[in-house]
Image (cartoon, rainbow, N blue to C red; front, side, top):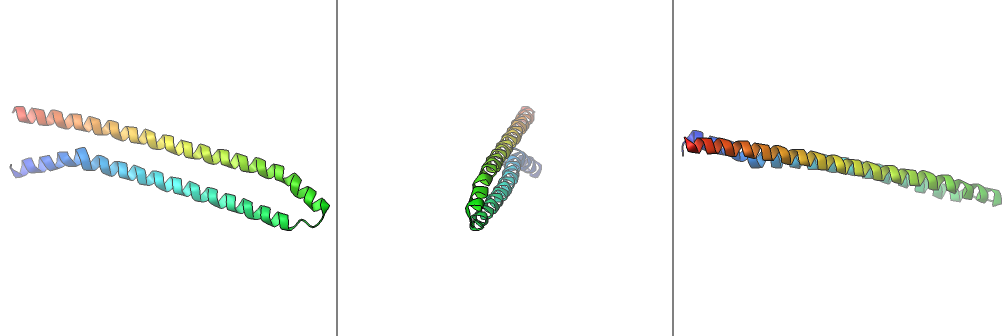
Length: 126
């Protein structure tokens, strides 16, 4: 096998296997980074909410304070449910984007493999 044939085979191997593997690894890493960031944001928001509610309970000193606290819980519950819904929608959108980008990578890899096999077939025929 000549050096140019070896270089060509190495290039094809890289374009068929290593290139797509690197692209998928980069996509997966970006997705993981976004997901972890979203989780950190959610944990921070939920922690702040919990601490705020704990402080509010400690501020209850009489019946009026208790009534105000209980009335405020409806707003807290509504805000929390909206936050949960938004967080879930964000994760679903990230998942869909990851799947779409993954499909594009697969399609590109299949096209590349088809071209490479066609080129190899032509070269073998010569």
